[in-house]
Image (cartoon, rainbow, N blue to C red; front, top):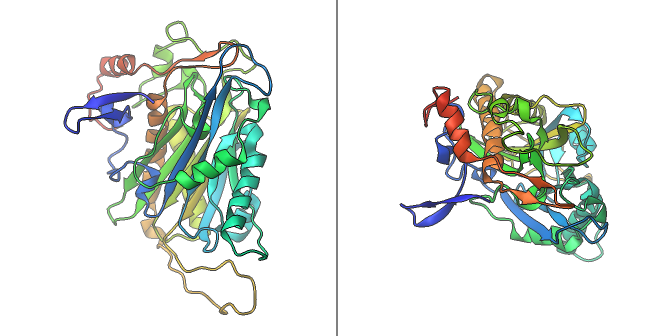
Length: 384
């Protein structure tokens, strides 16, 4: 990840949109400007980088990983209301049929590369089984998403192993979230620049928090827009080369968006929040290309005490709290703005990476970005 030295704190800070004065919307971010600003949410990464040179399937080069989002400490036992949305379906997120049917999330959420969805899903089940008393009966349909990193990574080598999933799960923490070339985003490309992991959050006037996490691996250079300025058009591949040569056309790829909130939403309201992530993607220049898998999941932690148990000992009814729909629009604002900013954070944190066969994905140059924005009468701190 790219960083700058913070003179006030005396430490290196990740390069993020706000570090450059790029402010998305009028809303206020949480203390970490991350999905972990939603209380109880934790994020962990395992990053795998090994080898260089020609592709040898099964050996490398390896540019991949896995990210795990833990919605709450008891997610395997206490479900959360959840919903999802598909902008374009050339992709996969396992477990979503049950999310749609039940309106509940009952597992951590993991994001990895396309070829490793199966091992990640199975490893999440194994991790939960190990936590439970021996001899018990347990079932799970974990939520695992993917984007394709085959332009830089030996994706057919399936280098993500169970121990990598367990490490990401065990290392998941609240607080700042590493962005850019980390976890599932290690080998990803966004608008023909190096992409990867990004996150952001917003706190509404009523005190509810919305957090967004993206794995950004989508988009065409010519459509990239920052603060309303056509940056991709003004920063063409003749100046910053696109990754290649390779089998994929511009725009080939996907984006997975995870939305979290502590507002007391029911499942249909979560689906409505998830849908708004597409508007944030559009503001950066995504259109849901034919080859793109743009899939969004939202969960809400505002109702607690629900049970996954399915037997007659459970109470006949359960009391829940629902945010009145007349107060939901500020959450929509938060999702749109945080999604846009999370994508920009992914682009700015990501560093130039060379992968298999010498293919290089160049970082979005922050100095040129500021020059372009300034030439279009943009000033730092002016929100878009």
